[in-house]
Image (cartoon, rainbow, N blue to C red):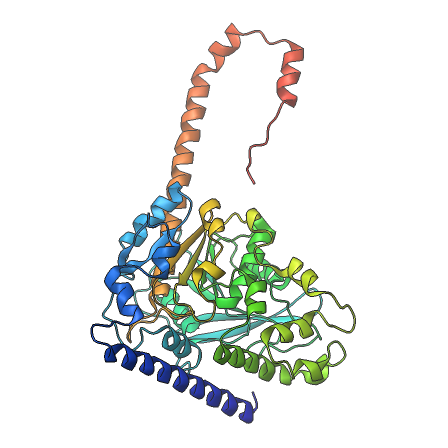
Length: 464
């Protein structure tokens, strides 16, 4: 990143932070000037209401005012029991970090600080492009736990946001997962976070083709280890697209999305609040400025770097290409993360906040019908947390990290119990079949025609 770019980004972030702080201060002063008046946040807490309660059906309350919205099932009951025992959801005293904008800006703007030790590996794709895999190799804590009974550490695939910024929470999740016995690996798209752009092709918003090759390579390196996946913010579009396209062949045991953007097209078209819109747009322009000469043969770089919104930037980069232009409608037909959501066959936990300033109110950006009708999707909705924040006072990690790892542990125990019960059922069936086989054959005469009808009479034993 050029020095002027970094300085400009920090300046804009500081101005945005000061503006939001001043706005919050004015609201607090205005509320205190009216006798007996309370701020909006305090009224919600006093009444036990708010956007989360209006959005939820209220049947699955959890500690800390959270709600679990899902279709009733055995797995939902197991997850609900695990979350009710979780200490991560216990409410903490309100602090200066409770505001949604502070939660979001502290997550995106503050320096990353000392992070984990990473071992980078470049993966050459079928079209000669490159993606990067950062394996978290240290620091190795003492007394590291094991995530499964087989003794092999489970692999945790982490997908950052679509802008390619490696945030504090992503690195914090990797450190906590390493301590809990996982083997984390961070997936970086073409041209993101120091990964060279060797071909003039970037990855569209919801195109999982590069991720498919990366998962295949990870399975080749760790064929016997369970694979879990976590995405952050706009990076959830890539993970959900992958799970929908691959279905039951995704190799993933469980997935989680932190503040996912689910209605992506509407999100681009509505636009973000101006500090976030300008900040994300500036970050993308700075990241692609080093590849301006390589991209000028495929896109109009002059128009690209003069874009005034995220939609204009995305449309110029992927729709108005010089070789194969497409319409905005066609682009989202191929990149909507929920286009194949009915084919997903992996449990997915979405952690969202009702005060998310980037995605907006939950009744606008969350498809409620998905969580009420699809047994694989679970929504954990909290009152506070901002966008990808969910921060607590140091040195405690974000409570979303704790919940995600507890969710993966509950999944592992649930599937292990299911396999044990299936094994007992098969053993019992084979035992009873052996006892009754001779008696059945002696009492029943089977004609050749009826035998052929039984052989060629079959039914589908799977569900979609």
